[in-house]
Amino acid sequence: MSELPGIGVGRGVASGPVLRMADPLGEPATTPLDGPADSAKTAVHDALAAVADDLTKRGALAGGDAQAVLEAQALMAQDPTLIDDVHARIDGGTNPERAVHEAFAAFQEILAGMGGYMGERAADLGDVAQRIIAKLRGVPAPGVPESATPFILVARDLAPADTALLDLEKVLALVTSDGGPTSHTAILARAKGITAIVGVDGAADLADGDEVIVDAVAGTVTTDPSASQVDEAKARVAERAAALSAPVTPGALADGTAVPLLANLGSPADAAGAVELGAEGVGLFRTEFLFLDSPSAPTVESQKASYVALLQAFPGKKVVVRALDAGADKPLPFLTDKGEENPALGRRGLRALRHHEEILRDQLTALAEADAETEADLWVMAPMVADAEETAYFVGLARELGIRTAGVMAEIPSLALLADQVFAEADFVSIGTNDLTQYTLAADRLLGTVGSYQDPWHPAVLRLIAQLGSAGASVSKGVGICGEAAADPLLAVVLVGLGATTLSMTPAALADVRAELGKYTIDQAREMATAALAATTARSAKAAAAAVHVA
Image (cartoon, rainbow, N blue to C red; front, top):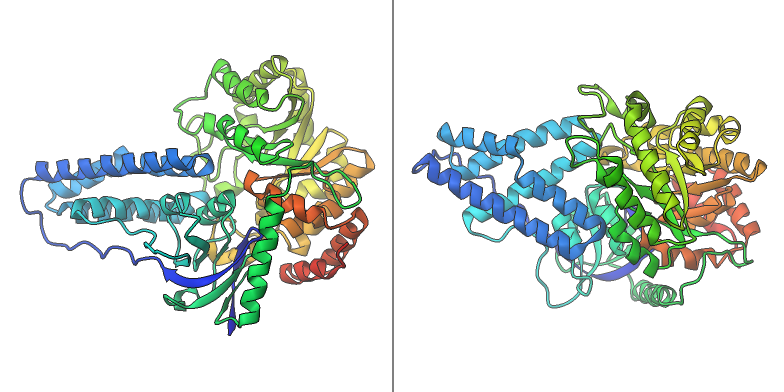
């Protein structure tokens, strides 16, 4: 028996036999073009269209975050720059499979060099290329293996198209050797409630038929487990199933302390599903979907229609909307600067909006008008805010344009260090733990090579959260958590102990977090937080919190 460490996603545990993902297609031959170039171009065009159509249909079936991911892949398959490159290579005498391979590989290299979100998309582009080449060869694209019985799926990484439509009756859990906590595999696994561990050392050595236990809580894959370990894992599966099927109630600790559980949403279309899973409102509504596919900023009228649809789904409930968060991994031609050497540390978030204030004014105007026509409790916050001066700027402009409740996101460590000054200006603060962890530990949150640093359990991150929690409590203002950390049930309890007043997460995580909160009192949550703060590493912080007695 041995334990392979990785980064757990969610609260699940599973046991079963390994089935490995098929290897990618072999690299196309370099043989010269055989036949007319126009015929080869037509074949490529047909393959591109078929792949784009397949990805779009898969997205429509999957819905939610998966749909956005797959639609982005479909757009990649029809990118005019890539198509022109493929055509140029065919005109130069390259066979169509090789032309696709070389053109996509060249673009992958560019994306990988950009790092961050764009670097992570390089893997998605590789998946698209594989699917196109498979169409040209007339063979199935590499994907999830077929099996008559349930299994643990092991792969180097999974393409979004595969993760989105996994058969949850067959796939008990995912294990990947690549990827970090915010890779597409992790994000989609969390959204679908799939037990998963990413970035597993030694995953490449697992073979078909190996019996393993996948424990997302511990972040370990146990090989060749004993019968008693398997029985314990099965008991935990049954216990979790019972918790997930329990009646939906408002989030609260064991002593009745209320902890509203909110949803992170990226589109009004996701609202109904979140309500069904027990979301008590929205803690983070990402507005980027309105801007990313547009050559220019959307009008006030078009934005307002989307905001009205969102707010109407939550009458009387809190809905926290984030102003456009562009730049770095989400560049926009009409807003962000071109050619920044390190855009993650450049003009992004509020910095970009302040540089183009007309875009921010239009967005705030649209939100205020939507608020006036609906009954939700609208809160609006600015992304990537560094200090009290930026806070005062945003809050002042928001109030000028009719926003009643305005706050900021804590993603930059400086904001936490100046928390008392920030709360003097803002109505609330919401902590984006993904970026706060990235900037605190100087580790790109989408770069697998520094995945071990991308852990919000790190005491440095927890101490910053504690400062924000204390500052908010001293003036009776809300401190929300809207990063992926809130979806970790045990960490959610610690965050409440650190002063978080609301938790917002992907809707699929709500039941697990609700059940975990109900095991502890506020005093125990604070004890767990104190224990975690005294630790020296992320792993020891988690272990220290877990060791505190359970009610």
